Length: 239
Ligand SMILES: Nc1ncnc2c1ncn2[C@@H]1O[C@H](COP(=O)(O)OP(=O)(O)OP(=O)(O)O)[C@@H](O)[C@H]1O
Ligand SMILES: [Mg+2]
Figure (cartoon, rainbow, N blue to C red):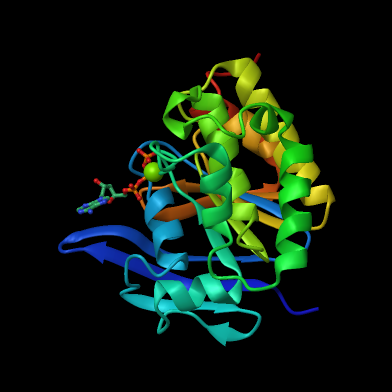
């Protein structure tokens, strides 16, 4: 079986800062994989490179066999790699409904858009209750749900998330992760970047630990969760 996404020896630099230093990983269709690591490890940079928002210095990113490093962001989105932005980037002066509709703005398959809208509303009943509210009036958790919903309306083949748990209360984080699992069970492949190592590894089939731009450990979510090195470095020791 060939991988859906294959990243080989990816390097990304900002001037002299070598943020990502030759990482390799892959994703098979239907999986959730996670890239975890501390502040400044290079997680967001990796995602930005996948989306074409920063240029790879070297290495390759293949999606369904096609090299992405030469494509523009909008072409990458058209191929089905859709990123939920860190900090959410929803449009606060538009309503929930309008924000969701914006997710589908490149699409012309109106029947499929309508059914995706129903699916998003079923996943996030809170959003339906607030359909006509201004997005700026939503709570942080609701805004994160909206950002995910909007990405789903772009009809992704691979959903990329940058720290969806950031700044949210633990109970909301649980909710978001449960929903990601549900979206995955529905067939969508998910690549999740997180500092919330425990939650991310719990839902992931496979995880990668990034330190200073290098992958230092990888394995199944369960094996990394039980790894003393991961426990010591990222989860405040054994508990
Ligand atoms: N636009 C930029 N210009 C220069 N250096 C940058 C830029 N963005 C990130 N960096 C640097 O690149 C390295 C990796 O940053 P990155 O944002 O990818 O880390 P991260 O793992 O996402 O961290 P966090 O968990 O804090 O979001 C850091 O040293 C950071 O300071
Ligand atoms: Mg980041």
